[in-house]
Amino acid sequence: MPYTIPIGPYHPALEEPYKLSVSCIGETVQSIRLDIGFSFRAIELLAQRRNYLQDIILVERVCGICSHVHTLTFCTAAEEIAGIRVPDRARYIRTIIAELERLHSHLLWAGIGAEDMGFQTLFMEVFALREKVMDLLEAISGNRVHYEMNCIGGVNRDITDPEAILTGVKQMRAGIERDVVPGFMKSDTTRARIAGVGILTREQALQWGVVGPVARASGVATDVRSDHPYAAYEELGFKMVTRTEGDVRARVVVRAMEMQESIRLIEKALRELPGGVLRAFEGVPVIPPGEATARSEAPRGEIFYYVCSDGSDTPTRVKIRTPTFVNLPALEAMSIGQQLADMPLIQASLDPCMSCTDR
Amino acid sequence: MNEQNESILAATLAGIPGAALFEVRGHGLWMTAPDIDVLHMARAMISLGFRLSTMSGTAQEDGETEVIYHYSMARTSLNIRTQTRGGALPSISPLERSASWIEREIHDLYAVTFVGHPNPERLLRPPQLEEGFCREPGGAAGN
Image (cartoon, rainbow over all chains, first blue to last red; front, side, top):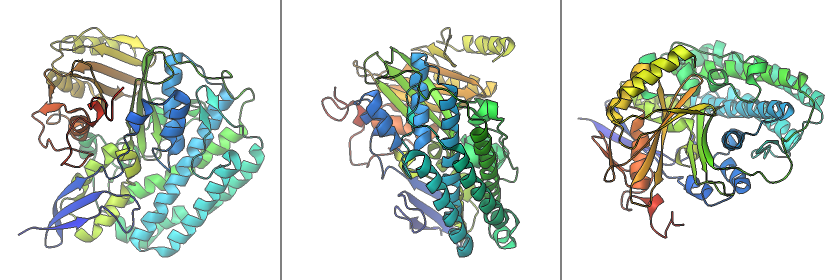
């Protein structure tokens, strides 16, 4: 006779709320049920009552980790409606912040993942590195979490001393290569705990429509940075990371290798940072009637915005689709037949963000 | 999208009952087809290899809801705009698993019924509240 264990809505490891009801026979998971909405703030509705400048502040608060990519995607949609071409220097700065943000997100996740594995030493090392990337973001933007770099038509702040940032990035590279990559990719402790756990096959990944590192770990070669390049990814020559195993370890390895690629992109962008202005125009943006969609690769996968304008200063419709919204339902495919004790790890391997999902 | 793929896409879309011509705007293809057969559309998109990014619902003054199906494949994004018929649309979830939460959210916030949805439960708001939070007159979504 199956029994049901409720997990959440408040989780010991994940700081965000959702409820997972796991039905088991013995220790084997038979089915799961997900309940979300505990952080629903109706942000789409609020965005349709504020002007474009206020909306940038608002959508930055959809998520506390991938805040930059939300404003980037919102601004990209508005820029497409208005036919605004973003200056080269601004495109590069957007890319640098986006990749620093990815480093921050992946490191945060890696720390939580290490703790869930019971690997406390790695957790400590990873979180020390996370502080360093937050220092870099603070050095550029003045903020550790909500960077407020994007505006419609460009960026708000310059990177005035790329060499100083490069020095910090080199330290990050050393730390990631010394601690994170061996810790997640070569350690026997890690391999024994996560290899073969929570498998999502390529067919299942396509069926559930997952995105980001979860898709790439199942052999689905999808990444907006190469599928539909934006900002400066085309010039910088982004290289996608994929694995075929589809298990928790593959998702870990994809993120670890993506951190190295992010470092490479940041270094190249800083070295090749073009000169010129930061904004296409000065003053308040005027968005004519029209509609556009925009996609970007957030740390957790594709983020999608639809913006519709009637020519006023307030958009008539703002639709936000975040990566966890499509990744989380696939937890069902990863969980059935797995051990109950592995559920925290399998959940964590999705890197779920409920603030984004519920909006 | 090259010319050959565009002609295959155009021919496939033209074969969907209720479809209209699409236009190219910015980086996307857009079609407005109020009476499109959405089940036929979903099958056609799957056969072409398009992925459902999401669906956008917008409340209309006549009580219906505009629904845009946003598909993507590599650099091509395809947006098919339709609208509910008597507050309902056929569910594409049995064909496209990733549509399940999207339809449940639109049902929750706009009170759209997706006929044939395998699990038509509310998604975001507590079950004891009324559906249609984003179309409450003078309330949450009021002008």
